[in-house]
Length: 261
Ligand code: MG
Ligand code: MG
Image (cartoon, rainbow, N blue to C red; front, side, top):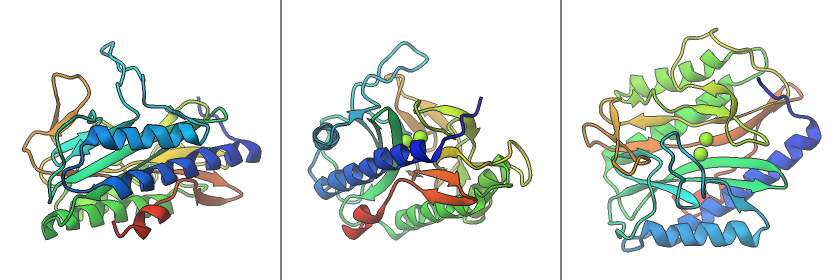
């Protein structure tokens, strides 16, 4: 069931998502060689709570009976999504995707950004550039009257034309009072296929793009997803609202990009 949001609800969604954008920028300020992802998690949790919100990911359940033990997902290099913050220092040349969710006044924010740690290779920079581009192409395709398949097609055609591959097992989603609502938003698809996009829909669009093959596996921790071939993976996510015939990005990379990342 797809919940269409009122303008008042979209206003609340905007606030929760702006907070995610600010949190990711705070995390971004702390990212450098030598810092651990556990330290980044602390930065995020404190900032979210100081701003009157709750980190949605902390305690989030998975189908294996395990609760996520941190406030952000930190997925390094060949980790695709759901990496658990730990005490391993980040190294020059790493990439780390930081996925963050906040619950503010009953509504959810959700956004992800893949950061460079120091100087990374041109090959990896290109993966990040193309993945981020595919997110914005997908947002452009997410307009009233288009369909879910148009969003996935935009991501898939752009990334595959650069020789990258699209993760199939994890997808974007509707978002509102719940972090994951209907409909699912795959990063692959056929134009003109799937549910119709309507005013009042709030969706998280989140391409997860592998430099090599699309195949992935789960670590024994039952959370961390990695590429099978060990090649890096990138993840960018915005929450958007379709309303008044327009598509508005509710989250923001503005403060992150001001840091030069
Ligand atoms: Mg997310
Ligand atoms: Mg999401």
